[in-house]
Length: 79
Image (cartoon, rainbow, N blue to C red; front, side, top):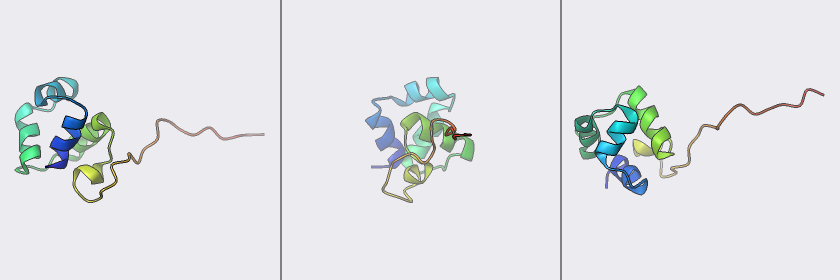
């Protein structure tokens, strides 16, 4: 199964629900899932964040879905 579809199904979302949350056209989502189109970098970031996986995972470059970003800057002690 395509990683885009797998990640969407894991979140229990339909393509229409993803379109409503992201603004990415359902036809484009379908093409990503069928391997007929590669998403733009912007759309790839949006989908990776929505699905809580890293972009390399969606592109099938790694088997580790763990996101690479942090939720916010890490506070440093100044004392």
